[in-house]
Length: 177
Image: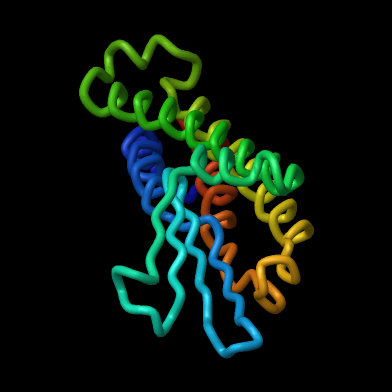
């Protein structure tokens, strides 16, 4: 059974790469004893923390993965490792986006690569899925909720990670006839 027609394999690889930039790979919710609610959305290139009830501007923090890493490197080394994995994954996604732009605008150059770049995109999507899964597990397992005054951190959304796996598998096993 063919999921993607062979004539659209390159376009699908480009589309999946561009969509992966927009996917949150982790959504986490926490609450404090005082009743405050925290939601953390982690996208490939930035993370958004929002505390409900504090106002949109005052309660929102937007940081890059590297900023998260530098903030946690001294106090929480296990979390810093997860943020470093996130940073490396973001760099890998930049490389995949550059390759997809080349596939879109300069297809004759990319066709010289094995699989025309589709296999490289598929492999990078699988690597991103693995990296984001590892980072999410590391962050959840080492969340210093008691120190920060928040209750249990609940990962309510890892759907983006599943999309990375699906995109990678579909790109790798697409029919290139």
